[in-house]
Length: 520
Image 1 (cartoon, rainbow, N blue to C red):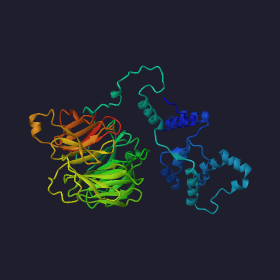
Image 2 (cartoon, one colour):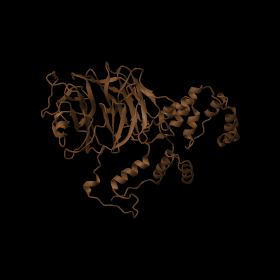
Image 3 (cartoon, helix red, strand yellow):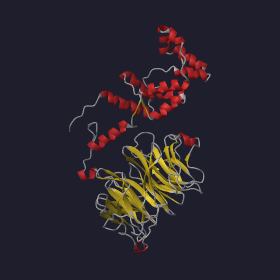
Image 4 (tube, rainbow, N blue to C red):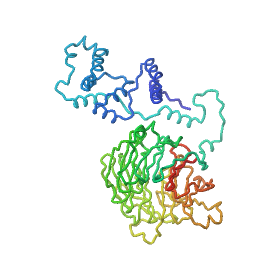
């Protein structure tokens, strides 16, 4: 295997980041002193600058305490204005830099003041100087790189004499499917239930939007509100939409690898909010993004900008830019409400994809906003038309997701009787049919229940479905065969949604019965 030379200082930087993230303060300090290497990183540079401009020096000082930076005399002045005379006096008289200044530049030492500039201007100068000293690095880089190394090597990454069980090449990449064993359950209040849910990008937490307008972040392992990591929840500062406005859909930006944990939510009253989940702050409020209820939402990238695509009850699909909050695209043509949206790729072109209760899945050109083709699930031919689809029967459920290779779609549709399809985006042709009728009893086959939601495993190998009788199904997309199904209904009342963990083999379902359940 080809060897790659890695700078020793980069290795130390990774170790320092690991120590910092895991609060190994003594180890962090010792490693810095022994190697004379410093780590000037912040989780969120914009928040760091905002704290400086707002004069939140307690937070700023804590952030830069582990960095190699020049002291800012602005802090002394602010301490005086806050009547912290002892702290200011201590900084002026005991710090090394101030003592040196007093001895070498006594006149300058006596003129420690704004000197013709106001507080905000001085803060801006400090913010600019510190901004040039720090940088943002994706979290958990050491663990991430080691994980990739393990996946690449398939053995002990340190080359020690550890006994390794050799497996056949075909089984090295084969993931385990979810066998529908109950792991954890979240119970909502008697007057509330989850209407939407999404795992965070790390998978440590699950976020729910509820019928009463609240957005809450839960610990996956305990099933409790996570008040340690998300301290604003401990102070009852819950993310929420306006009063009497339910949260219909939420999603995370899966391309965001920072600790920001950017999330978007759509509401019954047609509003869209974009949140910084790590702090609970609303960073973009798009009022009346739609003229009716927002039914589905997803993040995407178009022309190198992060965008939010959403659908509504009136059959409209809209795209808003995250930087401005302005609508930049609108796709019109569906004759019933939108149930799902996602992005796809056709050659080098970005496609917007929407599924509607009018019985069609439509693929749109993001640049021109024109219809590229329509897919009617279960039909072998594709249609390139804008004419009425009133001849198609209305469907109660229609779900579409983009598979891992980005050129295929997994579609489950009402009226298909536990049947789903894999379609090729490029030609709009069905390439695989998945049926859940195998192994069903006669009564189950006669009830003609439909698949209502579908999700894909992280590797792309398995597809999961839930039907109208609240049964879960697992299919292997390699051969199209059903692997297993749940023994009993997973909820007492109608299932409202299903999501898959971004890394682990874990599902979550939520229902009108007021519970969210996790399955492994």
